[in-house]
Image (cartoon, rainbow, N blue to C red; front, side, top):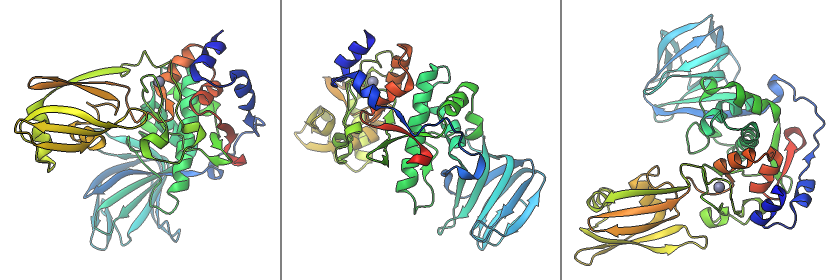
Length: 396
Ligand SMILES: [Zn+2]
């Protein structure tokens, strides 16, 4: 019965058929070798910093990542300052006359932050940029990276099948980033611009278990790693990457109806704004908005996203702002998506919307809803990325 309901929701020919096609290709139950055989993910932990502070637990080695030359070692390192200097890098009392050094540890490296401190596994590259600032890049095995991502992306209390779904999506996205950023300094950042990564500090028993149970599994389409985008809450329908980012149409990312995220706190939202506040924020960004009389949506995309807003002043002046910029100026966490309408209320306006995030690919709250209805992670992934296959990394 549930399968039938799902069929109605997604509008595919037959879920039985799709589920049948959606087999785990090449899965032979073999365990991926530990250590070096795994791909490494390069995560930017700190960018453009003028100073940093770190400490190291356990024995460590400092090396030149280009030549492999060992430059120093120790049993542990207490909290020290990390400063880019004229001819190299100063790490506590030690000076390294290089633009790049690598710290390797068997335990972990703590990077102290303004808000919180985080522990990272394996390697940390410390780079002095051309402009004299610091760049910290953590390099970890793919599976360790996913373990550090999962806790931040979903609650570790969510059903196991939802956690497994997230593990496969996050692993796929990391591999996609590795492919497109091959010649760049790093693959991902540690924030919402890629996937939120908390290092070893973010690991929990259940999220680690979900990573282990899906070890090495990623999504592919047409023999290539899928750009497996995901977002918090779609609000009823996921969007196509074509509509949101004008990417070429890709079957798994063309959007699907979602009847499973209505329990999300972001399913529907409403925010009240003072018009004067909006005016000041716009003007601070270089717009010439007068006293605002009216704000309306001037243009939407095919799928209903706000594309252009028209803001009219009391003296008839008109300012046009792109939806993307407007959301950025008012705050992407206040205007949670680009699917909203505006209701004018004198000196105020209400912005009433649906969903949180860009809306493309997998809806995280939807995976929770599906898992609660006892769908397994393969069915859930196929629902949000129709036509994609789960393959073992080594078989791609
Ligand atoms: Zn949804």
